[in-house]
Amino acid sequence: MDGVADDLFKALADPTRRHILDELVDRDSQTLFEICARLATKHGLGLSRQAISQHLAVLEAAGLVRSRRQGRYKFHELDTRPLEHIVTRWLRPDSPENTP
Amino acid sequence: MDGVADDLFKALADPTRRHILDELVDRDSQTLFEICARLATKHGLGLSRQAISQHLAVLEAAGLVRSRRQGRYKFHELDTRPLEHIVTRWLRPDSPENTP
DNA sequence: ACAACAGGCAAGCCATCACTTGCCTGCAAG
DNA sequence: CTTGCAGGCAAGTGATGGCTTGCCTGTTGT
Image (cartoon, rainbow over all chains, first blue to last red):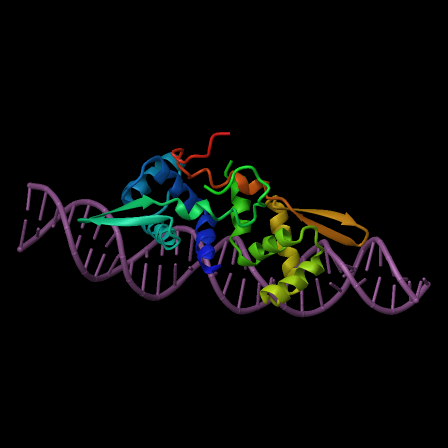
Protein backbone atom coordinates (compact mmCIF):
# COMPACT_ATOMS: atom_id res chain seq x y z
CA MET A 1 0.00 0.00 0.00
CA ASP A 2 2.93 2.29 0.54
CA GLY A 3 5.06 0.59 -2.04
CA VAL A 4 3.07 2.25 -4.77
CA ALA A 5 3.62 5.70 -3.33
CA ASP A 6 7.23 4.81 -2.73
CA ASP A 7 8.00 4.46 -6.43
CA LEU A 8 6.04 7.58 -7.14
CA PHE A 9 7.79 9.86 -4.69
CA LYS A 10 11.18 8.40 -5.52
CA ALA A 11 10.50 9.16 -9.14
CA LEU A 12 9.63 12.74 -8.33
CA ALA A 13 12.64 13.20 -6.07
CA ASP A 14 15.09 13.86 -8.88
CA PRO A 15 15.07 17.26 -10.60
CA THR A 16 16.03 15.76 -13.96
CA ARG A 17 13.00 13.49 -13.89
CA ARG A 18 10.81 16.48 -13.05
CA HIS A 19 12.27 18.29 -16.06
CA ILE A 20 11.38 15.28 -18.18
CA LEU A 21 7.82 15.52 -16.96
CA ASP A 22 7.87 19.23 -17.82
CA GLU A 23 8.99 18.36 -21.32
CA LEU A 24 6.26 15.77 -21.75
CA VAL A 25 3.68 18.30 -20.59
CA ASP A 26 4.97 20.74 -23.18
CA ARG A 27 5.01 18.09 -25.90
CA ASP A 28 3.63 14.62 -25.34
CA SER A 29 4.72 11.40 -27.00
CA GLN A 30 8.40 12.05 -27.55
CA THR A 31 11.19 9.62 -28.28
CA LEU A 32 14.26 9.21 -26.13
CA PHE A 33 16.44 11.29 -28.41
CA GLU A 34 13.89 14.07 -28.61
CA ILE A 35 13.73 14.31 -24.85
CA CYS A 36 17.49 14.18 -24.69
CA ALA A 37 17.85 17.03 -27.16
CA ARG A 38 15.19 19.24 -25.60
CA LEU A 39 16.62 18.78 -22.13
CA ALA A 40 19.98 19.87 -23.45
CA THR A 41 18.72 22.96 -25.26
CA LYS A 42 15.88 24.21 -23.09
CA HIS A 43 17.17 23.23 -19.67
CA GLY A 44 20.91 23.20 -20.27
CA LEU A 45 21.30 19.61 -19.13
CA GLY A 46 24.16 17.83 -20.87
CA LEU A 47 23.25 14.28 -19.95
CA SER A 48 24.05 11.10 -21.81
CA ARG A 49 21.42 9.09 -23.59
CA GLN A 50 21.50 6.26 -21.04
CA ALA A 51 21.00 8.65 -18.17
CA ILE A 52 17.70 9.79 -19.65
CA SER A 53 16.82 6.21 -20.49
CA GLN A 54 17.24 5.16 -16.88
CA HIS A 55 15.24 8.15 -15.72
CA LEU A 56 12.45 7.17 -18.07
CA ALA A 57 12.54 3.65 -16.67
CA VAL A 58 12.05 5.04 -13.18
CA LEU A 59 9.20 7.24 -14.33
CA GLU A 60 7.66 4.28 -16.11
CA ALA A 61 7.94 2.13 -12.98
CA ALA A 62 6.14 4.87 -11.09
CA GLY A 63 3.34 4.87 -13.63
CA LEU A 64 3.96 8.45 -14.65
CA VAL A 65 5.14 7.59 -18.15
CA ARG A 66 3.89 4.94 -20.50
CA SER A 67 5.90 3.85 -23.52
CA ARG A 68 4.53 2.90 -26.90
CA ARG A 69 6.74 1.06 -29.35
CA GLN A 70 6.49 1.87 -33.04
CA GLY A 71 9.13 0.44 -35.34
CA ARG A 72 12.53 1.44 -34.04
CA TYR A 73 11.07 4.37 -32.17
CA LYS A 74 9.67 4.31 -28.68
CA PHE A 75 7.34 7.14 -27.80
CA HIS A 76 6.88 8.16 -24.21
CA GLU A 77 3.55 9.46 -23.03
CA LEU A 78 2.79 11.27 -19.82
CA ASP A 79 0.22 9.94 -17.37
CA THR A 80 -0.58 12.35 -14.59
CA ARG A 81 -3.24 10.25 -12.93
CA PRO A 82 -0.94 8.92 -10.20
CA LEU A 83 -0.27 12.51 -9.18
CA GLU A 84 -3.84 13.50 -8.49
CA HIS A 85 -4.56 11.60 -5.31
CA ILE A 86 -1.14 11.49 -3.79
CA VAL A 87 -1.12 14.69 -1.81
CA THR A 88 -4.64 14.40 -0.43
CA ARG A 89 -3.15 11.89 1.99
CA TRP A 90 -2.02 14.77 4.22
CA LEU A 91 -4.42 17.50 3.21
CA ARG A 92 -7.09 17.81 5.86
CA PRO A 93 -10.69 17.59 4.63
CA ASP A 94 -11.38 21.18 5.73
CA SER A 95 -9.80 22.50 2.54
CA PRO A 96 -12.19 24.01 -0.01
CA GLU A 97 -11.46 21.99 -3.12
CA ASN A 98 -11.73 18.19 -3.06
CA THR A 99 -13.20 15.01 -4.42
CA PRO A 100 -14.01 15.24 -8.16
CA MET B 1 12.57 28.37 -8.70
CA ASP B 2 13.19 24.67 -8.66
CA GLY B 3 15.27 24.75 -5.52
CA VAL B 4 12.16 25.17 -3.44
CA ALA B 5 10.51 22.15 -5.01
CA ASP B 6 13.76 20.26 -4.67
CA ASP B 7 13.72 20.33 -0.88
CA LEU B 8 10.06 19.48 -0.91
CA PHE B 9 10.28 16.42 -3.12
CA LYS B 10 13.44 15.22 -1.42
CA ALA B 11 11.63 15.45 1.88
CA LEU B 12 8.75 13.39 0.55
CA ALA B 13 11.04 10.79 -1.00
CA ASP B 14 11.65 8.89 2.23
CA PRO B 15 8.90 6.59 3.54
CA THR B 16 9.82 7.30 7.16
CA ARG B 17 9.29 11.00 6.62
CA ARG B 18 5.92 10.30 5.04
CA HIS B 19 5.01 8.24 8.10
CA ILE B 20 5.97 11.20 10.26
CA LEU B 21 3.62 13.37 8.25
CA ASP B 22 0.92 10.74 8.72
CA GLU B 23 1.47 10.86 12.45
CA LEU B 24 1.26 14.64 12.51
CA VAL B 25 -1.97 14.50 10.56
CA ASP B 26 -3.36 12.07 13.09
CA ARG B 27 -2.16 14.16 16.03
CA ASP B 28 -0.61 17.57 15.52
CA SER B 29 1.99 19.28 17.71
CA GLN B 30 3.96 16.31 19.00
CA THR B 31 7.39 16.20 20.57
CA LEU B 32 10.29 14.21 19.21
CA PHE B 33 9.84 11.39 21.71
CA GLU B 34 6.14 11.16 21.04
CA ILE B 35 6.72 10.80 17.33
CA CYS B 36 9.46 8.29 18.03
CA ALA B 37 7.18 6.18 20.20
CA ARG B 38 4.20 6.30 17.89
CA LEU B 39 6.30 5.36 14.88
CA ALA B 40 7.57 2.35 16.81
CA THR B 41 4.17 1.15 17.97
CA LYS B 42 1.85 2.03 15.11
CA HIS B 43 4.19 1.59 12.18
CA GLY B 44 6.67 -0.92 13.60
CA LEU B 45 9.67 1.31 12.94
CA GLY B 46 12.47 0.77 15.43
CA LEU B 47 14.49 3.86 14.69
CA SER B 48 16.80 5.77 16.98
CA ARG B 49 15.93 9.19 18.35
CA GLN B 50 18.49 10.97 16.17
CA ALA B 51 17.18 9.35 13.05
CA ILE B 52 13.77 10.89 13.64
CA SER B 53 15.40 14.17 14.61
CA GLN B 54 17.25 14.34 11.31
CA HIS B 55 14.10 13.46 9.42
CA LEU B 56 12.29 16.27 11.19
CA ALA B 57 15.09 18.63 10.21
CA VAL B 58 14.60 17.68 6.57
CA LEU B 59 10.86 18.15 6.82
CA GLU B 60 11.41 21.50 8.49
CA ALA B 61 13.80 22.59 5.74
CA ALA B 62 11.11 21.72 3.23
CA GLY B 63 8.60 23.87 5.06
CA LEU B 64 6.34 20.93 5.84
CA VAL B 65 6.94 21.04 9.59
CA ARG B 66 7.40 24.00 11.87
CA SER B 67 8.78 23.61 15.37
CA ARG B 68 7.70 25.51 18.47
CA ARG B 69 9.90 25.52 21.54
CA GLN B 70 8.30 25.41 24.98
CA GLY B 71 10.51 24.75 27.97
CA ARG B 72 12.52 21.63 27.38
CA TYR B 73 9.98 20.36 24.89
CA LYS B 74 9.85 21.08 21.20
CA PHE B 75 6.52 20.60 19.52
CA HIS B 76 6.35 19.90 15.82
CA GLU B 77 3.43 21.16 13.79
CA LEU B 78 2.40 20.12 10.32
CA ASP B 79 2.13 22.65 7.51
CA THR B 80 0.54 21.25 4.38
CA ARG B 81 0.55 24.47 2.39
CA PRO B 82 3.65 23.60 0.38
CA LEU B 83 1.88 20.47 -0.82
CA GLU B 84 -1.08 22.16 -2.39
CA HIS B 85 0.45 23.72 -5.49
CA ILE B 86 3.18 21.27 -6.17
CA VAL B 87 1.42 18.79 -8.38
CA THR B 88 -0.48 21.30 -10.50
CA ARG B 89 2.81 21.84 -12.32
CA TRP B 90 2.12 18.79 -14.47
CA LEU B 91 -1.65 18.57 -14.36
CA ARG B 92 -2.98 19.77 -17.69
CA PRO B 93 -5.40 22.70 -17.66
CA ASP B 94 -8.19 20.58 -19.13
CA SER B 95 -8.95 19.37 -15.62
CA PRO B 96 -12.02 20.91 -13.98
CA GLU B 97 -10.45 22.70 -11.02
CA ASN B 98 -7.61 25.18 -11.64
CA THR B 99 -6.33 28.70 -12.16
CA PRO B 100 -5.85 30.63 -8.93
C1' DA C 1 23.40 -6.67 -48.01
C1' DC C 2 25.49 -3.12 -45.58
C1' DA C 3 25.63 1.11 -42.97
C1' DA C 4 23.37 4.34 -40.02
C1' DC C 5 20.16 5.00 -36.41
C1' DA C 6 17.09 4.18 -32.01
C1' DG C 7 17.44 1.84 -28.09
C1' DG C 8 18.81 -1.82 -24.39
C1' DC C 9 21.99 -4.38 -21.10
C1' DA C 10 25.49 -4.62 -17.66
C1' DA C 11 29.29 -3.41 -14.90
C1' DG C 12 31.73 0.28 -12.50
C1' DC C 13 32.50 4.94 -10.15
C1' DC C 14 31.38 8.62 -7.23
C1' DA C 15 28.24 11.31 -4.45
C1' DT C 16 24.44 11.51 -1.49
C1' DC C 17 21.65 9.61 2.10
C1' DA C 18 19.88 7.16 6.14
C1' DC C 19 21.26 5.59 10.33
C1' DT C 20 24.23 4.83 14.25
C1' DT C 21 27.37 6.01 18.12
C1' DG C 22 29.25 9.11 21.46
C1' DC C 23 29.33 13.27 23.80
C1' DC C 24 27.49 17.71 25.08
C1' DT C 25 23.66 21.49 26.37
C1' DG C 26 19.36 23.10 28.90
C1' DC C 27 15.44 22.54 31.53
C1' DA C 28 13.02 20.57 35.38
C1' DA C 29 11.86 17.96 39.52
C1' DG C 30 13.73 15.56 43.83
C1' DC D 1 22.66 21.37 44.04
C1' DT D 2 22.27 17.20 41.82
C1' DT D 3 19.85 13.77 39.10
C1' DG D 4 17.23 12.69 35.15
C1' DC D 5 14.89 13.92 30.97
C1' DA D 6 14.29 16.30 26.13
C1' DG D 7 17.00 17.47 22.59
C1' DG D 8 21.28 18.90 19.70
C1' DC D 9 25.97 18.32 17.49
C1' DA D 10 28.97 16.23 15.39
C1' DA D 11 31.87 12.28 12.91
C1' DG D 12 31.70 7.67 10.86
C1' DT D 13 29.64 3.74 8.26
C1' DG D 14 26.81 1.03 4.98
C1' DA D 15 23.78 1.33 1.32
C1' DT D 16 21.35 3.48 -2.38
C1' DG D 17 21.19 6.45 -6.53
C1' DG D 18 22.74 8.93 -10.64
C1' DC D 19 25.83 8.83 -14.32
C1' DT D 20 29.24 7.00 -17.33
C1' DT D 21 31.51 3.65 -20.49
C1' DG D 22 31.43 -0.20 -23.53
C1' DC D 23 29.10 -3.51 -26.10
C1' DC D 24 25.04 -5.67 -28.12
C1' DT D 25 20.10 -6.08 -30.52
C1' DG D 26 16.82 -4.64 -33.83
C1' DT D 27 14.96 -1.45 -37.34
C1' DT D 28 15.28 1.79 -41.39
C1' DG D 29 17.17 3.48 -45.72
C1' DT D 30 20.22 3.38 -49.90
